[in-house]
Length: 179
Length: 178
Image (cartoon, rainbow over all chains, first blue to last red; front, side, top):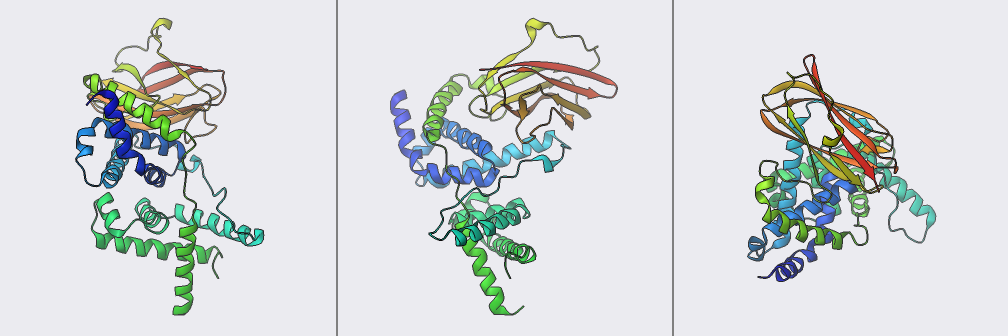
């Protein structure tokens, strides 16, 4: 294939999955700039494996898995090199800036407050639990898809999902979000 | 707490999670990412041997900041101006600089201090001009990505100081902001 044909074939294969991959990158990293870097790194890696990509039945799953592995590799590499870091508390906190509201401003304000509390609660979960609950309950991934992505048994995904939801409920009750 | 209450709260948690905002990419990001991937991917295929040993490099704006061979036996001689590596950054656009130490021997519990000029920040550490890590270096190449963000056009020098026992070496990176 010519260079231009390669580019076109690559674009046709990856573009339908962009939104889902971008959201996965965001859920993994928790930050926009890092999500963009991870997304970019995935595309570079995937373009280098175009021959493999064209032969794959479900490129979306393959791309998600490659992205997850890139993320884990990067985390391990970084962790190996920093035995101790400055206070993690310095890391920026995102917060919810807005959501698709209804026609009732008061109800929207209440909902926004609840979502902010959820945001705080999510940050108290372990990385695995947070990722699983967000992928399943927010992004709509099936248990089987999470199993393929993270390489853990479906039963483990299910139990972590239940524990994550229970912990969220507990935190939200404690914070007075739920009565 | 009765079961009905628990079930209601579980449903509320689920509903909240469904409503939790879904991130969206900035306009034009996908096009830029695609263009960079095909350009960078082609370049990497041509120069694959250059990258061997450095793992997967991070995307766009990648800079390898070779701070040279690290072995602290020699006195810390000042770097000649001409040998100071430099990068040009765009205002408020994060850029990853990969710090590569080639160490002639393994070093345990070395202290790495990165000092930033005013107007340059390390992503994740807003407002901090000096960030210190304790780290171990393996014999051979050691790789540490630093994501820098320019918040003013002043630029300046980023310093990386590596200390081990009572010896230290400082490396400099010139940063211009366009």
